[in-house]
Length: 469
Ligand code: F0G
Image (cartoon, rainbow, N blue to C red; front, side, top):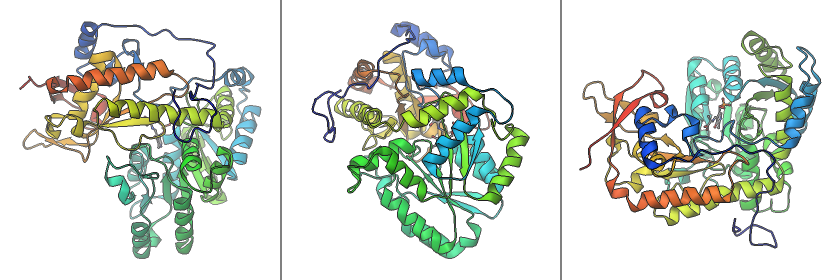
């Protein structure tokens, strides 16, 4: 992959920093076959069989490739119900990385969220953050509390690049705390901001949040799903961090908070798992009680010993500088190619994904006719590439009176890169598919919803293409 401006390498090409030991064949398909698969799936990409997908960019969650050391760890996994040595390793890696006292394993990130908010939140409370991920928001709201996003101003304009669009708006946070600090049990900073385009948070912003919360006695928690990608962005973009290791930066990030929730399916480079880490003895004691109720005993929390091993090893590998340089460059390279193809994206590309602005790319399709759905179906039909709509299908709703769509704020399509899975030629192929789609975009038509469930409609709704105008 050609270098970015900050590659720091003597050579032009940034190579994938691994070689491939085990492979999984891809099944090629024709456009006609894909038309049939898509129709059978009700034009809903979640309902496709994965073997009918050529390049799967639906999510970077749990889809990464494990290293030989992780697989070796799987064999070493100690499956003891209590006091497993794999838990001891997991705990010590996480303590050393985060500095937090209590490490509570969970089966994935949202289980850690559910426990955290059950312990800390409830009716009348408000949980501010830079931009809560949907499961975080849902788990906050499930307790009766309010989830409040306070993204910085730069985040509002998708087409304008800024280095740290994941930052929180400190003035709005201060206004909230002055008014209602007693109702705020904690604040959450999500690194990186997945809902806003995979954008990082600066070290300075984290430090200032911490300082402000101290004035009001409010704890800070980090949603650490992509903490390592955030650390690498800080290294590459924030003055004063250039010569530090990603691990040093990550440890400083964690040092400003009182705990974290983690989906190890992202920067744990594991296929399943997560954890809650806390400094508070009181919160941890209640959390462990809840853990035993629904996840499992405190030394496995719904995971097998082998999963704990894979995560412990993954958390070390994810901080290797060569890996992170390749990782961020892959998303940037995909973004550059897609932008050149005439497709509008959220600028700059995120750490784990490129977000296409479907409304700007397909201006002839009004939001009511689901431009994000249309664009993601077109990428699949064109080249078997699976993406995910993040727009009116996911966050809008059907007006019960008119039957029409109430659009979301944005209509985006996310192309998320699984970790260590695809090579540059796969990325080049995706860019070519986007180019072909863009050349024919005038012929792409909108969609309508034929049927939908009462909640989380994007997973199972059935769609139909509207006839071309
Ligand atoms: N926090 C963030 C920032 C996330 O992106 C996710 C999951 C979670 C928490 C929940 O973690 O899936 O392990 O329960 N994001 C996935 C995605 C689903 O596709 O972006 P989980």
